Image (cartoon, rainbow, N blue to C red):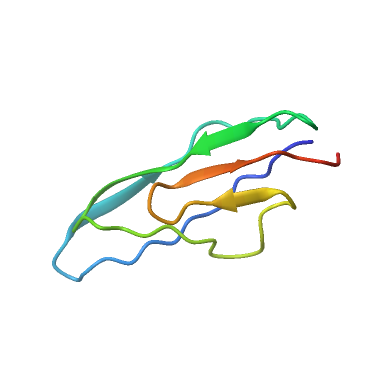
Length: 77
């Protein structure tokens, strides 16, 4: 099962340093195997919160809004 790139939206104050969001290269999730993907934000004013900007993650996956970790156990392909 290919996990499509999820776009994170972050909120920052107007006077914050420029915000940069880094996502790793596309990865493949395997049915029945644990999967983890780390999205990293740098810059901004700190205390950034991640959220899904458009669409949804596949069934069985969650996004930790504080850490930017997408994780889950895919059950279908």
